[in-house]
Image (cartoon, rainbow, N blue to C red; front, side, top):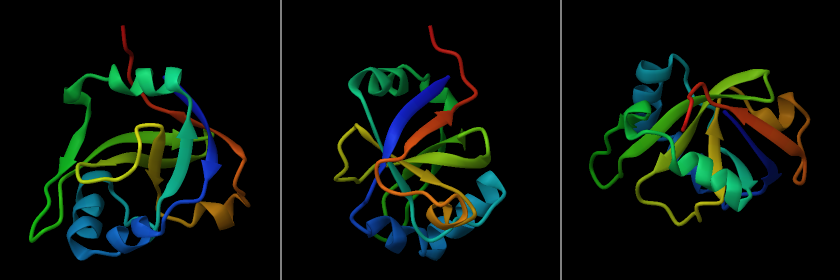
Length: 129
């Protein structure tokens, strides 16, 4: 399944959360990489939101929160058919459903020379009916 969107700036909170040992260690264990301390925020249209909603719950992994930090659901994805990573869904979030947060081992804005407004595609290896 492909999800298309555009790059937007976030609030900076992803940097704080991705720097926390509780998340970094569990992401490394679950996904095999230490995440860059930040998330790539991708704004998607309503029809793309519907695709995400239709993904069966069993396809998501979960990183349990501790000590005031909430759980984070995730699903592996690939950005622009180039970069392996994951879309994360913090259970305690202030994001609207039309903003996806993508994590990867590197600073994607730098390594891919990305700017706000750039079109991006996330590929998720799942089929929905």
